Image (cartoon, rainbow, N blue to C red; front, top):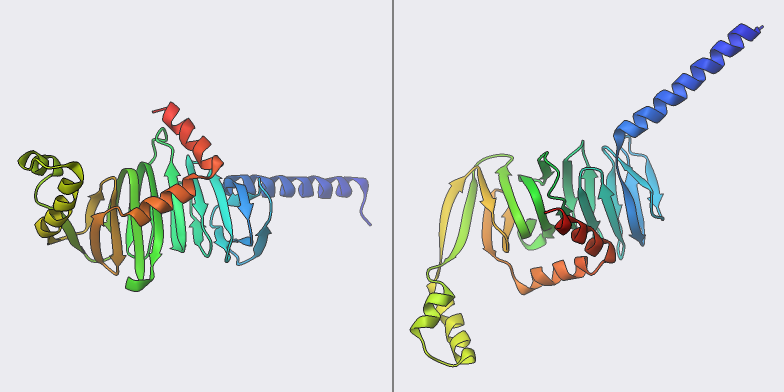
Length: 258
């Protein structure tokens, strides 16, 4: 028979246990969903799934966010990161300041005022970030992934052997070339486009890490890296993501604190 003392003790233990569970969940909290469209779910570290169908749903440490066909989700994290997952994308939320890209097309923009370095892991690389806006997407033709950088800088580090880096270089600048030719603007641009193709050459180097500059794109296929200028298709991807009002608001706030 349970007396009043024993009952009080049990209740006290249950309250302490519940408080401990709440604190544990708070310790794992990494961010929240700002907007969701379509079929989106989160898989926790035990494999348990939950459907995300409204804003303010929490995202915790070791959760994997999954978007199905036609879906998109906007997530804000507690370490100054706003991310958008396009359809058929997967992103695992690691410990603070760490993410793992698992597939699809994912947009990242990072607040510049946070001092701690942030990182995104892919199959072949660890990407070090400071105040950056970029997109990671699947490159199915090469069975790898592409990283397009809009602003900031990325430190790309190999998770295995040294990268084999293939880089396209233009030997002369357009400004210098234009001074040598006195023609109309349209004629000059057409001639320069032809000249640029002839003047562009490729060199190869082997490095375990390198820095990616703004308006450049890398295609990772295993540990081969092909680096090029950003294309119109890349620019269209950024425009599509940044048409989202939540992205515009976040980036405006970032600009204010530069």
